[in-house]
Length: 499
Image (cartoon, rainbow, N blue to C red; front, side):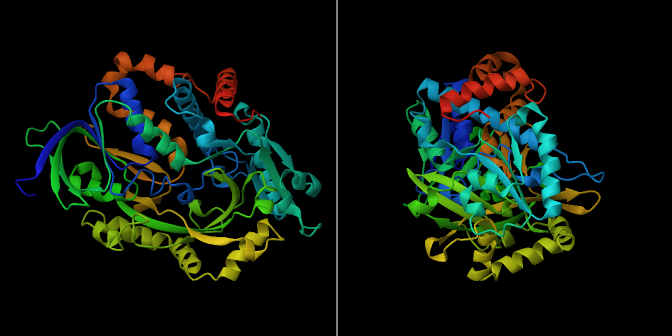
């Protein structure tokens, strides 16, 4: 970096201006208002990558309908443990958003969240039997109170008419439905959070700036970040006591540049996606549900097919997909060199092991890349038999980078969740991975604060966190009364329904 470059400083630098960084920035300013925070974003505005409305499913992942969260055990029973985790983590998001609305930090819930029932839908006797077992296990738990199940064509047709019109009446189908679900526009939510942050003192936002390098300060009390202004070409150096890498797929590249030992062995496997979407009013208004099916064998969780109601910028849409694909980019607006440049001596073996052990996934992705529009329409017709291709248009979804990490047994493992990686002194934290991502951003940030700021939490932060998240310190999985109280309260503020 040029010695003439400007040198500035901040207490905290957040790299990326998506839902993760903005959520964390609001948390930190609520907990410690005097902190000086700098947000660095390579795009011209916030939420233009994975947080953008058309780049994610917007489910409000409450694990109501996502069948990949409830696998079948070897003994034939259904394991709902993962679903419960995600379900109660989403409750933290609901509480945090409600706090911000009551405070006036977010003007209206209608700007980002709307009530939409969540459904699971399957075809065939074996899958119907699975869904029935799943419903029995989930509806017995207080977190899934009010979940309905049906194999009756007429009943399912009342829930979601487009699913059943034109369907063979002899076809075996089954569905579950819970009315307390939501559609969330995470791009709009991120913009709400950014708008609030810009009203606060000591918050600097730098759009069209890219972090080109980062290194520990010689004194050991933080980091230097080299930042390039993409408009002017000028460089600057920012010093920070604490750095958060929340830049989606780019977080891995920056984590590797940091040189911390904890980053060794991590790699990334990028997966792209394509949607079909319909904005025809007379079609979109007849479907009021997010309907999830079962993923094809060998496909990644982000490829679970779903027919969704979406409300984006005040307009009602239907979305179907995603159709998976493969690109070597780590970001939708990234470089095709992202994957090759991420290969390091310490992650070559994990990358090769994952390539060896995941041939069905690779075969599936290759098939998706070369899939014709007729094949895509056929997949949609499984959900919506009378669909008219003329009503649908194609759109490219966001890019996801799945985690590859060292594994003592297999050498390398491909994971589909999210992971927090931090330095030993917690001065640098990176968020890697994909789903459920945005929906559990609040839980992820609380979890990170617990791990990286334990001393502050033990001290004066806990009362404020409990003000923002009333269930903090409780156990939503075991306390039915707490769940009922929290969900009724947040439903009233957010305009959602109660099951």
